[in-house]
Image (cartoon, rainbow, N blue to C red; front, side):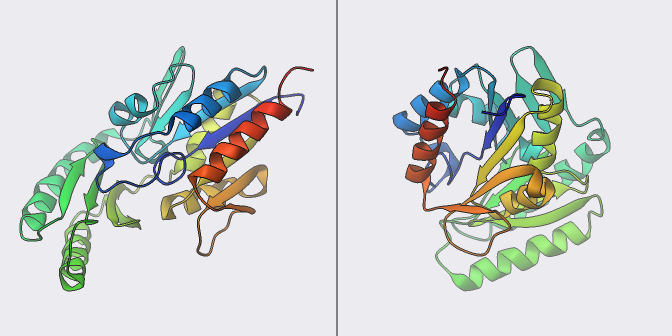
Length: 244
């Protein structure tokens, strides 16, 4: 165990919890919750759940008040005794509201697509769209929409488009500021599965132990097969950080 401690940051959907048809249906397995709680109880260990979800939906899904939670791709963080929101968000509220209205109008013509407004980012889900042609139409419409909002950018995940601010910030950035505030000098680990987690892998680089969950090319240094492997990894970290 590093003398300065350890900060373990973990994505939620597809990493801790299996992907669900809709985000509201995702459930954290009880063994994952127990592993997170055991690890967070170790001396010198800080555990963060870092997600594209809004904090208002992320925290109840995990239900462990002792953890650090980072939502909206790292733009907002809450921890015991500390709350942080990116100071540059103000000018983006109006563009995001306009984008939300336009995205709802667009998805009304694409059966199975729907909009999740997370305040500081916007998700357009299409996991239930049954036509590749409609998926392409949706993507083209969203790209056109975002071209009309220079303050925003469009990124993709697993069956989801994300309309996000152009603030140069990602999950990895939030891990760095959480370490600075809560665990100065701690060694870092980050575990994730999706395209936005690749941003974090690149931001953290060789400053962290990075783990990609699932297949596909990745900037991460190590690989896990699925959420079950993540639980095993968290349990192993809890063992090696246990007091002698």
